[in-house]
Image (cartoon, rainbow, N blue to C red):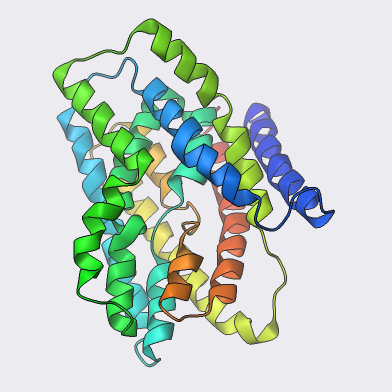
Length: 305
């Protein structure tokens, strides 16, 4: 248990380091965008390649991608119902912020630190389904509800997915595993070195993105979307852990992943749907803090280290 708490405390420290450095002016409010590019296009792909290095394809793991997609679809529907009596922009806010999981920049470092290579692979499989919605699917649905989408929304989804480097790497590594291709040791050694920076940079970036100034007028919407999100996540975790036939390791991965925070891109999509981008950013920040606590407690309970 001590080792789990030390690792979790290190993650929390890095997050607050990023936040503190932003507050004192060492980083500007937009510097996180550069680190985000590095994480999403360099260190995260390297972590995925390293995790898949000795992975033999197991067709049953493809179900994890369907679970990632299915969880998103359920939450999008519940988000729509939560805003049923509201205008289109508010409905879009609930749909975008109740659904989706920040895997690459948040859950993946936890997987790297606590779950080992197989846990990272399982995380990637879940995220391949999750990414379909987070990178454009949910936005297409929300934009339609808000009346801000055009005919190109759905047709642009494939383009958004293919332009996502992590998603492309997931698909490439799945194909390589399926055909039995192995990268040379020199490539894997290089990727391993780069992947070592992923956890630090991802946690630092999250700290730089944190906004913790809560206004009273935002409390109701923020509370509703977070209560909906984490209550349903608890149901998902219970079902996955006790009522699926996956190995214990995969069930532990699923329990952690469903408590990942709101995707970092959700505030941007909320603004594009003419919703309250400031509230979405605040909701995102609060969800990060909640997820840190829940996932740390779960790691201790499951004795993962």
